[in-house]
Image (cartoon, rainbow, N blue to C red; front, side):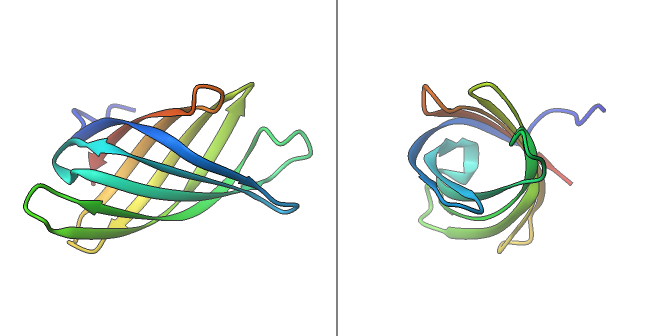
Length: 119
């Protein structure tokens, strides 16, 4: 699938990982293009016994250079391969943006490379 050029890209750091019986929660922060400083939390729910794939829901807040705060609801799917997660998300932002977001997360290095595509 050709999504064209991303409207924003960035590297985010994992600031916390919380493990519960029914899900895991990852919190991230970093600079993502014109969105500015982004804070996001993902609640991951496994869909198989091997815990290699599933769904997620989450929330994000962004503070851009103009001081505008944008919030977004996140929902999507993920796949884990060893210590790497690949997330695909459909996001609805408070400013009206509708985005498809991909994230490559290295759990051990606690980093995430994010690309945002406009829908």
